[in-house]
Each structure stands twice: as structure tokens, then as C-alpha cells.
Image 1 (cartoon, rainbow, N blue to C red):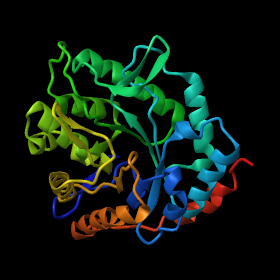
Image 2 (cartoon, rainbow, N blue to C red; image 1 turned 90 degrees about the horizontal axis):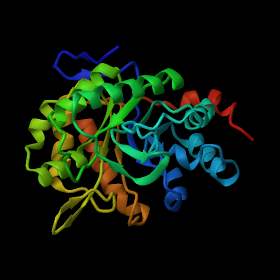
Image 3 (cartoon, rainbow, N blue to C red; image 1 turned 120 degrees about the vertical axis):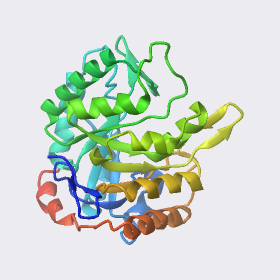
Length: 305
């Protein structure tokens, strides 16, 4: 079931995902402060690769997080655009983790990160062709059939175009999410970074993607280098990125907006104004917030020892 219009024309929900509100990534150096910040955070995003097939301290951290907040999963290793087979071991471990962590939805990136079975820590852009669309859609269907949860793909920051591209990026993303019938994790910082580096209007890009499929939004900072902008998740969010977030929230009703900060982690108190800014934009555009903690009692009953 896709989003349905409100009387004011805004769009609400995607496949009945819970509305979570303002989120933050679960980062171990900020763990204690994060778990105590129930007044500024509504939910947490975790990286499943840090917990799949593991026990001990890793699982205890995720247990503690789950006891305080609803969870959402954001993976980095599906390598949706690779020609390598989708790893059945990965999907098996992911499903086992989700059986007890019970994420509200899960996501990964529209990219490839493996070749001939070798994984590398980068998110490589795909050739924007209809052949790629068919290939990625097939792999998304495979993931959805195996995991049976709402799945989102994220638009990446990309620093090169391939000589094979014959589609605009917005059209490429739109065809994939529509044909795969999946959701979209919209990273507005990535949109801004790409717009500066590749010289296009970010609002035109946003006007040409299916905002009705946006379930989650990422907001982050980047760094300016002589060669261009780099999405580092290691700096404060700048004004134009806040403007893009506000523009999107005025036009659609996602289920959550999350601040990404992965590098150059400051004291937690430094992040609070940015979390409050997200809350301000969320509330002034009429976003509801629903307490989702009730579901945790049943989920925690299945947490592995």
C-alpha cells in the first residue's frame, strides 16, 4: 500500500510503517549519552553488520538500545548492484538478527561494494541504464522475499559518472523503487553534495523522485575539499541541507528523520541542537509522533542470551 494524500496534499505512510519521529545512529563512543537522551531522540538506527552472528558485548549493546528505543536497520553490505550472487549467508544472519531485534524497517544503499566475492569499504555508483534497473530490481525482490520486511534503498553520494549512463539519476532511482515496490531512504545531504559536484538543481532532482515512497530521511554534514564536496558524516549540517529537509517535509510525510554523525564524533551535547532542529522542522510541518515502545515487550522475549 503506497502513501495516501492528506487533504492538504501531503503524503502519509508507506506500507503502514510506524511513525517514529527523530532518530540518531547508534554509535558506541556515545552509547551512554544516547541511551539517556529519550527527551531528544525517538528511535535509533543500527548497522546490522556490527551485530550479525555475534554475541557477547555486541549483542548486549543492541539489547540495551532496544530496551530504550525502537530500532531501524541500515546495512552497508548487500551490494545490490553487484553481479556476484546475493549472499545467502548474509541474508540468513540478517533474518536471524531481525527475528529478535524487530526493526521497524531495513535499508541499504543503491550501489555495489563487491566484485568476484571481494568486499571493499566503499559504495560505488552504478551505471544508470535500464539493464541495471532490471538487475537491481530482481535483487531487491530476492531480498524482500527472503526477509519479509519493508525494505528501503538509499540514494548515495557519487563522485563519478560512468560512460554507460543513459538515464538521469532521478529517473534511475524512480524506476527502481517503483518496479521493485520498495521504499526510499532519502539522504538530503547526498542530494546536495551531488548537486554541487555535478552541477544540477537539487530541487529539480527532488521534484522528479517519488516522494510518496520516502519512509526515512538522513541528514548529515560534509566537508569541502578543493576537488569538491565529500559526504563524510563528520561535520555539522549546513543551511542548504536544512532547507532541503524542510522542502521535503512540506511535501511528504516520512516515518522518521535521522541525524547521521559517524566520524569526528563530538560530545553528545554538541549534537543536541541539530536534533532539536530536526524536531522543529518535523513539528512545524505537522508530523505526528507515535510512542512505539509498546512493541518492545514482545520483541525482548526473543532476545538471545
